[in-house]
Length: 420
Ligand code: IMP
Image 1 (spheres, rainbow, N blue to C red):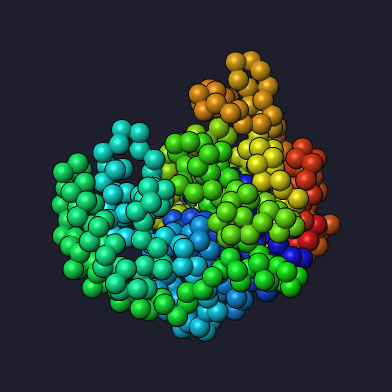
Image 2 (image 1 turned 135 degrees about the vertical axis):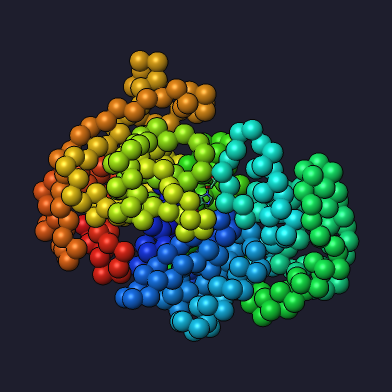
């Protein structure tokens, strides 16, 4: 293997962390290329549970872990994670690109203030992600390179902060005690602590690829939270699709050898926005409880839907998926019947993929195919030992998507991964 990208094919929370952990064992480098601490990746090793928001999941495997230019970094969160992982696993072999943007306190305040004022609420994680990416595009952001240099940090804060304070107070009526002095004092210390980790990620990854090392790119969120191809405006502010790897890391497109899509055996979504295959009531509550479908970052209950092949066919196109991995199949265990959304109906027409117009998507109705339920035994080791009904379900997905399933996860533990 050389350049492998792991992407979420739904709305995030597909269980990418545990899959990256699995792949990381065969990798030399693991790289995060977009998003920020809106993400939450959980890896379980024996009794230990690791919850990470910013550090690449590869740190658990003690692999060289890199945070690329396309990520937005809350330095307080990152330092807390570094401290925690240092205590449990050991000091991470971490490199942070100097071009990555910093989430400042005014971004977090703006995220909260904006959500409060909006009629059409996005349901953001309120971690300052949107305002930080907006500032980057507006070309007045503070980057890692500035954070670690006191003179640059002070100058940037003097330019930017008074304006942010005015916007917060006069537009949003958001009271705050921000001042250049206070923020500088706090953030200069954070910069000093992060300085030893700063390095040119683009260069390091390119060299590793030239040397034919195994490089794993770990996306955060999922395909339908993509800023362009997701369910806009109910999306995140970055590109969780595979194509973002190149721009986010600073590598050429030819570096990507394989794209692996992570598919949860059903669908979940946090925050607002359409979920065509959504289910409500007792059944949704049951799946939510068994699947522990509560946000790793915000603790919010996730909305539940049946597996949606319309989303997955579209995800295959958007990411160029070479194979898929099914996660959390065990969560469906014990249900009498399991449904799959095979296509949508729009004004009497059958749709196989997500329509380009959001106004059309809003009118789509799901069409389901029913499958007999199955019981998954926790200690199943071989694909052929899975119940026939479970195999029927999986093979239907494979046939419909025309993509190979490489692994099936039947539990949160490292050993509960079955090769297909
Ligand atoms: P933001 O990324 O905090 O701006 O939130 C925008 C939308 O993306 C909201 O609906 C969030 O719930 C959703 N979102 C952001 N990150 C994640 C994630 O890691 N998993 C699932 N949903 C997410």
